[in-house]
Length: 114
Image 1 (cartoon, rainbow, N blue to C red):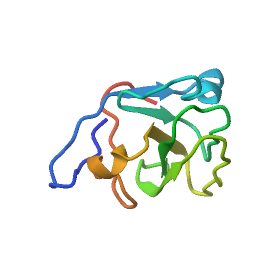
Image 2: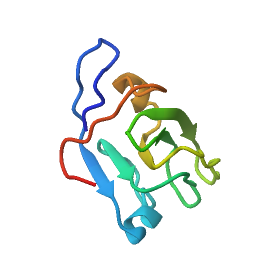
Image 3: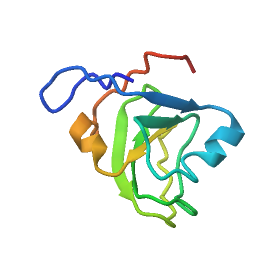
Image 4: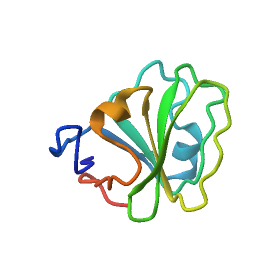
């Protein structure tokens, strides 16, 4: 994944898993104690953290992969769906700010196609 910018204005490449099937999206990050990189759920408009072991950062993306909002979610919460969200990016809590992922940033997927 290349988010186009980081806090220094440079491109940043991040390991990315893509969950495109219903089963993969339903499982998401359940059962994991940590996350290497990020997980892209596509299509997705919202997420929950019921049964999760760790807090996560959640970025809601529109159909052009522009970030609509970023939220940190603790375990056992239900996130509000975002009406324009078509994809959701999940990662360990706190890392997205360091990557420069914030509202208005366009995320670019370089490996794999949707």
